[in-house]
Length: 153
Image (cartoon, rainbow, N blue to C red; front, side):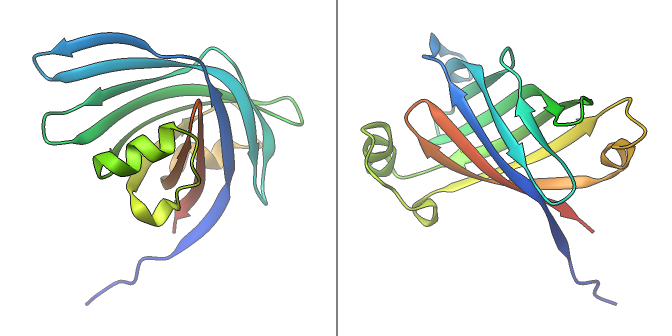
């Protein structure tokens, strides 16, 4: 029996990033750490701000893929805190990454950028987030990242 995968949109995330700290070439790849400067989250069941202070730990692997490790906090518009962390993969042809970092408009179909957010909250109102699996589809621009986040039903 095949079960069809269904999704429901959780929302759109927009995060401004600071200049990266480049650790350099490690045995696993080139490590870069981007601080989160803050942003927004808006969806049908919740909205709020992405708080400054989180960050994105990016490992550019020898095979050309970027391995993401991201942590952050959302404050909903009604005052609840939601911690999120996720891993993900970003892969794009080198010329696409160059165009993106130069500020050119690059359609998200030209690269692969997926994440797996996990949510953690003490809020009763948003406690349902503690019990879902989610997937984010990412978009890039210089010093900015955006995601469309879906709950897997």
